[in-house]
Amino acid sequence: MTTTRPPQYERLVILQEECAEVIQAISKIHRHGLEGRYDNGEDNKTALERELGDVWAILTLMVKKQDVDIYRVDTFRKAKVAKLTDPNNPHVYFQKESYT
Image 1 (spheres, rainbow, N blue to C red):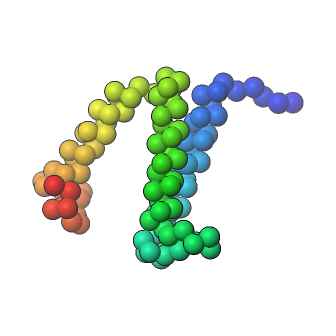
Image 2: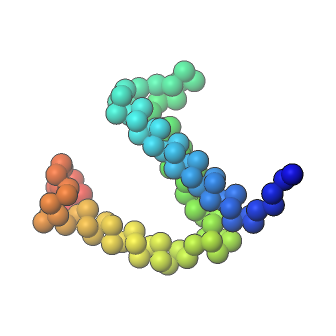
């Protein structure tokens, strides 16, 4: 028996999968550096950029379908940038000057 789920469910699953692929790309960078290469010749930096683009794509679709509110997402994005660039933030240890 097949369970019918709303289209939003599928978009959430795709977002989850894409976020997992971003995590995997970052793990490869930790292990092999930005210049490390996949068997297909793609470097790790390009793989990360591709996966981030995939997350952006599903986010775009979720906004279009009103699964999420882009204005609220942007509000949270701005708050995170402010927190990461705050020189008094005790949780950002490395390269604080590169965020300003």
